[in-house]
Length: 333
Ligand code: FAQ
Image 1 (cartoon, rainbow, N blue to C red):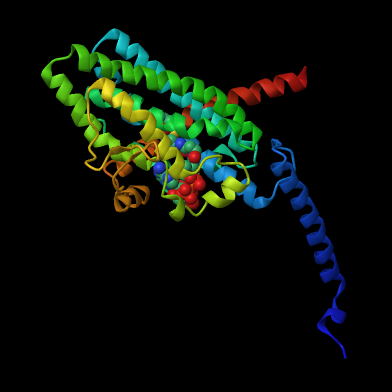
Image 2: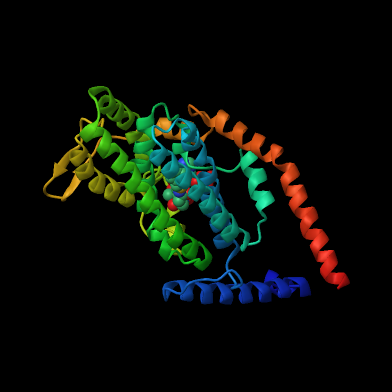
C-alpha cells in the first residue's frame, strides 16, 4: 500500500529540513528566554517576536511624540518663568524618548519612515491618553502626576524587557519620567497648599477628567488582552495590564490624600483583606472608541503630526543633502 508520505518530492524534503532547522532555532531562542538572557538586535529571533516588538516599541515612540502636543500647548501660557522652563524641558525630554524608541525599533529592520507612515495613515496606534484635551493649567500638573506616574509604573518593568535595545532605552526614559512625575505632583501641591479656592477647584476638576483615562493607559483587562500572554511568555511584558493598573491605584491614592483631592470613583475603597484598593468599573466602550480614532482630540492630534511632518520636509532634505556632500568629500579625499 502506497502512502502519501512515500510521494514526498525534493521540495517537500527541503521544506521539512528547513522547518526542522527553524524548530531547532526556535527551541534555542525559547531556552535563552527561559534562562533570562537578553536578546540583541543581531541575534536570531522568531518573526512573531520581531513583529511584536516593532508594534509595541513603535506605538510607544508614537505616544511620546504625540504626547508632546497636549503639554506643548501650554508652554506659552505657563504662569511663571520657572514653570515655563520646567515644562519646556519636559516636552523636549518626551521628544528625546521618542527618538531613542524609534532607534530601538529600527534595529529590528523597520525604518523610521515606515513607522511614521503607519502613524500618519492612522494604521499605527499611540496611547489613548493623548486624545484628551488639556483645558487648564492644572491639567499640566495632573498630566505629570497621573500620566507620567502611570507611564513609569508601566515602563519600569520594561527596563528588564528581553529585547536589550528596548530595555536600555527604557532605563534612561524612566529616570526622566520620574522627574516628570515629581514636577507635576509638586506643582499640584503648591496649588493645593497655597492656591486660591478657584485654583484648588481647578485641580480637582482636572483630576476628575484625567483619572479614568489614566487607568485606561494600562490597556484592556488581562482577559481581553490578545497580546499579553505571548508577550509575557517572551519577557517583553513582565507584569500584566491589570496588575500594573492595581499597583498604580495603590501607589496613587495615598498621594491624592496628601494633596487633599479625591478621585471620581464612588466604589474606591481600601480592602484590608487583599491589602489593595478596590476600584470601580472602567468604561471600556470609551477606551475602545478612543483607541479606534474617535476620542475628543484624535483627529486634531493626527492632523498636527502630519502637518509637522509635511512642513519639516525641507529640513530632512537639507540634512540629507548635507550628509551626501560630506560623504562625497570623504570619498574624494
Ligand atoms: N492606548 O493586547 P494588549 C507616556 C491596544 S508613554 C492605545 O493589552 P499590549 C510618556 C494595543 O496596542 C505611554 N492602544 O496590547 C508620556 C493592542 O492593539 P494592537 C505609552 C492601546 O501591547 C507621558 C490592543 O489595544 N506607553 O505616557 C492601549 O500587549 C506624558 C490590545 O491590547 C507605552 O506604549 C492604550 N492605552 O499592551 C509622554 C508603553 N492599551 O497593537 C508625554 C509600552 C492597549 O494589537 C507626556 N507599551 N492598546 O493593534 C506597553 O506596555 C503595551 O503596549 C500596552 C498594551 C500595555 C500599552
